[in-house]
Length: 332
Image (tube, rainbow, N blue to C red; front, side, top):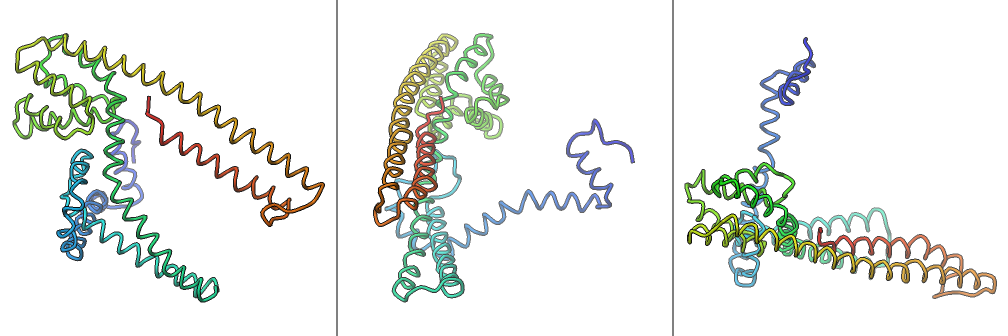
């Protein structure tokens, strides 16, 4: 068998499997199933959710109405009624699974008093179900916020690129088509793909295609930019000048946001030094002194208190601090 060097990845992959005796038709079938199995399972799961909890979703539509625009802006292509049914069905499954898991642990692995046993059997299924419900409820909101941050952080550079492209006299639709090839712009590239899909597949005009995406995008800044481009085109304005002004404005706001975050980071650094460096050192010094004198802290022996602070409290506080930094990071 000859070398597979220089072949495309898919062909090289196929040839390598043929070398070990796998029939080519079996390889194609395997890869097709691998691509199709997840969407099929998702469709089945949605259907089961509607069968078991469609009636409950119908009754709760008004209570979940505020979630509908978040589903739309987060590009989650699912009806609100179906999403509510999925939330209820998943919450039910997790609750039942956690109930049997706790029952197995408490009857086979751990022996507890009756009162604690009953408490665990009730508390942990309810807690896991509540966490699942909250997670699925806030997921579209969190995804929308993530997309908005991604678009806003890349918008200054994408706008500058658009201004440079427009200055060469290229029509707006080709400007967005060029943006689709730049993965560096993150979600803006995906928004540009949606504009081109509207134009090429659905036959919309460039203005209508941009209005459609502007109506769905989670970023207010990108929405304003698209509507401004549409307005400039429809009124016969100077698109080059408009994009240049918008790019300068976006870059200025980006610099301001970055400088503001750097100042905030300096404050966080001072808090970290005070709360997670100086304070633990003083507490450990105090406990070391008490170890010589003798005594107890919160009912614990001094060595146990030192070990608890060193191996549990301090790691938890540091991990929490890192999680806080990650959550508050604006991406600039």
